[in-house]
Amino acid sequence: MKRVFALLLGLCLSAAAMAHSYKVGEINIVHPWSRAMPAASTTGGVYFALDNKGKTADRLVGAATPRAETAELHTHVNDNGVMRMRKVEGGVEVAPGQQVKFAPGGYHVMLFGLKQPLKAGDRFPMTLKFEKGGEVKVDVVVQDGADSHSH
Ligand SMILES: [Cu+2]
Image (cartoon, rainbow, N blue to C red; front, side, top):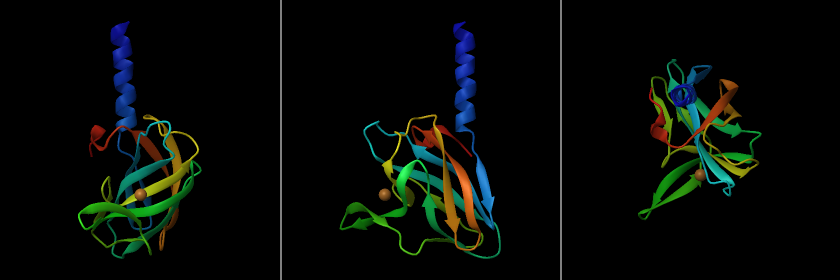
């Protein structure tokens, strides 16, 4: 019985950790994920990689999710040795042949006013808006850390 449970757990974990990706215009959105947060937290971050395999640049200009009141594009800047978050004005460009990573400590989609805590194993929908490609709906997987999956 114990062994069956362990096996099922293993299957669930690998299904949740499996990389998923989406395409809009020239851009591939690889493995959107969010870090699990304590239940009291009302903010969170969403991360993914943007791959441009096409011949023209595109630009991520916005994000929205029913899971939070607002979603903003953020980056971290070094302000005299102190890392601070800053809202990205004008979007994030992805040049042809380039990959732009949204990851902890760098670019991220910041969620404010979470309507439900971010619990590991959850999934929630998010819409990403690109200047040329338009809008695409992705599923964000909530997980404990960046290293629980591989590409
Ligand atoms: Cu932020």
